[in-house]
Amino acid sequence: MFPLTIESDSSNTVKWVKDPSSAPWHFRQIMMRIELLKQRLGHWDIILIPRSVNSMADGLAKQGVCRNIAASGTSC
Image (tube, rainbow, N blue to C red; front, side, top):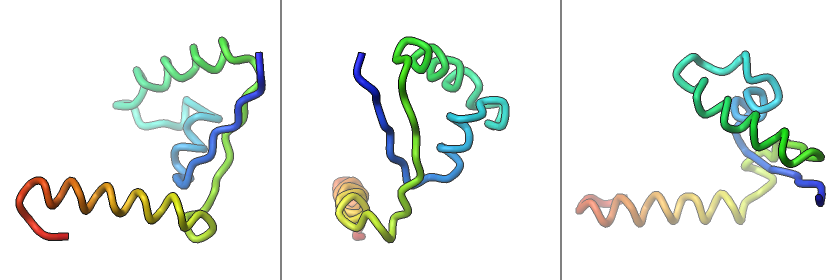
């Protein structure tokens, strides 16, 4: 298997994936599924990439939000 590096701009997500017991109880089922995936992958890592550093992803995310809002009939 190839190593996998996951990048996230959510410090909570990074913390919860590294330490599932720190996640809120209502995310426990999701965290259990992530734990199974992590075991299957073997070599993986998750790192925090601040939004200010990753402007392209931040811009795309904002476009997606605006598109969803526009589809609902309101303005962004």
